[in-house]
Amino acid sequence: MNQLNNEIISKLDDIISLIKDSSKYKRFLEVQESMKNNKDITSKIDRVKLLQKELIKIESKREDTDIIFKEYNDLIKELDSYPVYQEYNELLEELDDLYQEIKFVLENHINNILS
Image 1 (cartoon, one colour):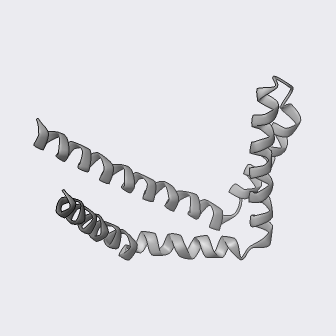
Image 2: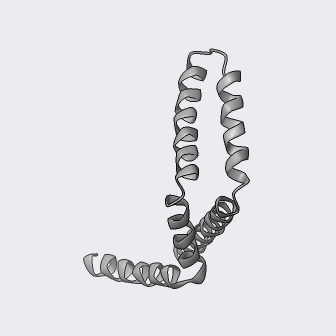
Image 3: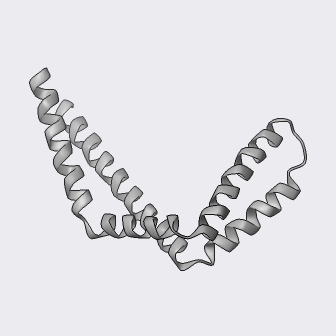
C-alpha cells in the first residue's frame, strides 16, 4: 500500500509540475504579484473581506444588511474596473476549471477501474 501511495503522489507531482509550468499559471502568479503591489487594490480587497465577515455576522442576527451590502457591491464594482483585477479573476476561474477537470478525470478513471 505504501508503494502505491508513493506512486500516486509521484504522478500527482507530475501533474502539479505540468500546471506550474503552464503559461496560464505563470501569468496568474505575475498578475497576483501586480495586485499585491497595488495598494489601492489590496486595501479594497481587504475591505471587501471585512465586509463579507460583517455581512455574515449581521445576517446571522437577522439584522438589516442594506448599508453594508451597498458598500460591498460598490467596492466590487470598483475592483472590477481594474484590468489587472479582471485578469486575475479570469485566470483564477480558468485554473479552477482545470483543477475541476483533473478531479473529474481522476474520479471517472478510478470509478471505471473499480466497476
